[in-house]
Length: 439
Image 1: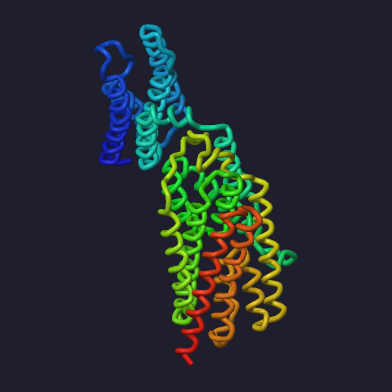
Image 2: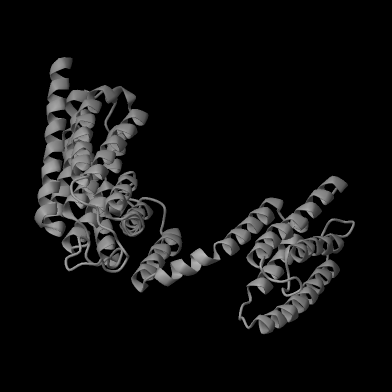
C-alpha cells in the first residue's frame, strides 16, 4: 500500500467515526457537557483508532499476519471494555437502559479498521447505513408499534419465499414438465404475494383511493392477474370499495396491454403496426374506466385496523395475502403453461392460437414472448401471429372476469366484467379496422 492510499484510507476511518458521531452528538445535543459517554469527537477518534490499529497490524508487508490479528483483536477488546464501562455508568446516571451507544462505538471501531484492511466502498456504505438507522430511531419505533402480527407473518413468508425457497429451486426446464422452469413458476408465486402485500401497504399508508391506484399501476407492470386476484379477495371480504378496486384492476389491465406491446416492439418490431391499434384501443378503454370509477364518491381513510363509523368503506384490513391461495394459483399457472406449449408444439401453426389462448390465461408476458419466438418469420402476421397474441391477451382478460365473478362477486364482478368486455370489444373493432385498411 503506497502512502497516498494509506492516507486516504486513514481519512476514511476518521470520516466513518465522524459521520456516526454527528448522529450520536445530535441525538444527545441537549445533554450537558460531560454527561454522555461519547459524542462527535469520541466517535471520530474511535474510527481513527480502529484505522490506526489496523494499519499497525498490517505492518510494512501490507498483509495481516497472525501477530497483527492478535494486536487488532486485543485493541478491540480494550476499547470494548472502556466503552462498556462508561456506557453503563451513563445509564445509571440518567436512569436509562440502552446499549445503542456501546454497539455504535464497537461498530465504529471495526469499520475504521475495515477501512484500512478491506474494501473502502463497503466501509463507507456501512457507515452511511449505520448513521441512517440511528437517525430514524423514532420512526422505526413508531412503525414497530403499529405493525400487526398478520403483517409481520406475511412479511416473513414473503422473505422466506424469496430468499430461502427461490435459490434452491432448479433454474432449468424439465422435459416431463414441458420444459417449464420451476424457478420461473415460483417467481410467479412471489409476484402474486408481493403485489398483494404491496397493495395492502399502499392502502394503509396512502388511503383507499390513492393506495389502490398506486398499487395497481405498480402491480400491473409485473402481473395484472395478481392485481385482479388481490383486489377480488379484498372486495369479497369487504376491505375495499368495489368501484375503486375495479378501477385498480382496470388500470393494471391497461398497463398489461402496454407491456405486451413493448415486448412485441422489442422482439418483433415488424408486428407492431398490426398489433398496436388493438392494444392501444383496449388500453384507452381500461384507463378511461379507471379514471371514471376512481374519482367517483368520497375517499375513505384507513387506520390499519378498523375504520371509524358503523359501516366502514374498507372494513377491517386482514392478512395481506394468503400463502396457500397464492401457491395454488402459481401451480395452476405452471400447469396451464405446460398445456399451452404442448398444444403449440404438437399442432404447429394451426395450434398457435389455441396455445396462445391457453398460455395467456395466466401469463400474458410468457405468451407474448413465446409467440414471437415460436412463430416462424415467414408466417403471415394477419393469419397467425397477430391473432395468436391478441387472442392470448383476450384470454388473459377473460380470466380476470372469471376471477372477479368467482372470488370477488357482486358489484366488483359486474364492474370488472363490464370494463373487460369493453376492452375486448374495442380491441376487436380496432383489429378489424386495421385489417380492412391493410387489405
